[in-house]
Image (cartoon, rainbow over the protein chains, first blue to last red):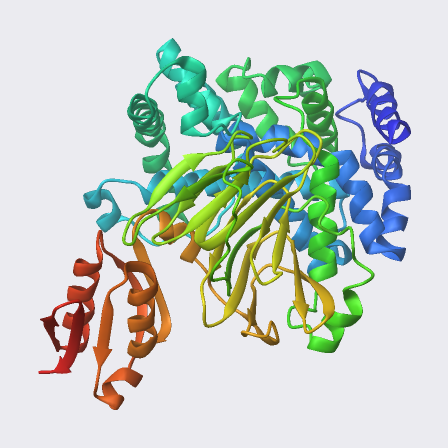
Length: 226
Length: 331
């Protein structure tokens, strides 16, 4: 396990800086081989023994995938479910047979896309009635600019950061540490009712901030697709 | 200008330190498939350097193994179950399960009230409490739960149930299992999650929503155990004979807590039985045809009276009350 990780790092270091970006195509080629190469062993494992291969992928990518997903969805349980599901699909639907890029690219592109769509769905499902009435049925879609992903989760972080300190603390205990209302109440010497109220307000605040920009944005995306 | 895009550039971009113009550069740059590979490679590196929290990879792999084992064998036959039973003693490891279990248990009598703390709920009452290991229990109507006063959570976590309860089991650092025992030798072994045990006369039923759970029971003299996979339903009759396994949609366990009642092709006769079990209300339906009509759906009701009213409206029947008995008749 340690070996696998360090090999990722070393390849990254080699390419860092020395990676020329405006090279002619034939010179860029070896680069892509190198990128694939660090997954060579996993790739072979996946093709000969999918289950073992997927377990190797878990060891290598589960942690960073969760860390990434949680930035979008805000709650670690949701993030882990989302990531697990990607692995389950990867395995049970034989997705690996069609992947021409690195598994890393596939897995991370998928996690970003699903997290993005989850958040979109989450924002829209509790929208005001009038908004819902106007809302077309959202299909999964991919934003056409990669920076949309970054912008979305940076906005999530920003929204959480803007919560009042105490409320943010409760919010993070619930969402991030997955603590129960009772546990939060005990630790902060509050009543369960207070925790409930604070969480509701925090949720509403975060949502309102995100929805302002993203729900509209997402609708526009949809309309432009039609 | 592209030449400025290197790992530091992307790291800054991921950290949200890029200007709008720089973001646009990334958008263009990444359209080249080789750059895209590089981007994800750096992204992984970045996430390794700045973990938001540490995941339990081993647990996740266990969940995957459970999933992989469940692949294609969602309806194991009885012989398969028996064949599996002795081999898979330890597969409850890493379990994250949510299940509803209906099993027969009537008079669990624990004479020694010093040894056990007893929680009881009266007819028509729902009680919530938290055990010393911070497992949350919702005890539904007419049920009781006995928890050892001494040593609970230290060596094992075992509780004894009569009736019906929803458990939100706390996960322990040492992966200590949580066991729910009932009188008829049916045991549920689970590792840190939420599930419901429903222990009533008539028959036993286990429904598993998520994860994996081990169910041990005795049929005649033989001790048996099965591993359940998500979406499975196991029913045990009064002799603990395995009746069937089907995939079903189960929200019941969650429903218990917020006074929702879920019926899935439940006949009125079964409904009457349920009213008796949960609320001690005798509901009589004399018309056989009426008793066979079925109920589908989820209803919210605070109390049995409300539930009865809803049901009577759905079937357009009349409620006649005489003493403790309620008579349902066609209008």
